[in-house]
Image (tube, rainbow, N blue to C red):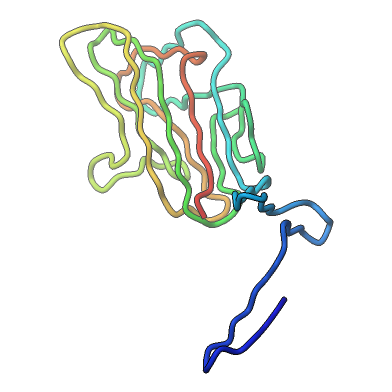
Length: 176
C-alpha cells in the first residue's frame, strides 16, 4: 500500500491483481483490463431433465428442477427445488416455466421460507389467464434482501395444469 498526503487529504493506493481467503482460495481477481472476477460468488442455474409434462393439479406444489449447469455455493437443491441463501445479501432471482393450460390459466408464486410471499395478495407471482389453451412460457425476475439460510421455492398457485421441466429454469446470483 502506497500512502501519501495531498493537502489535507490522505491518498492510499492498493495495487493487487488477486485477493485470496486464508486457505489460499481465490476470492477476487482483476484482469489487465480491470474486469473483476469473483469465482466464489453464489450463483446457480437449475433446469429439469424430464421431457414429460408434469401435472400440477392443485396449488402449492413445488416445481422441482433436477439438474444444474452451475451451482456455485451449493445454493440450489435439486432434490427439493429450493434455493437457500448461503450468506445475507441482495439476490437477483428469476424463473421461466414452459406451461400448458388445459384450463386456459396458469399461475406460479414465489414462496419465502415455506410461505407465499404476499401482502393480502400474492406479491411475486406469474399469472396468465386467456381464452386459449396453447403452450406458453411464464417468467419473473426480482431482487430481494435475503438473510443467510432463507429459502425460496417456486410453487403452483391455483389449478395450473402442467409444465415441462426440460424447457423450464430457475436461476439466480448474489448481487452484493
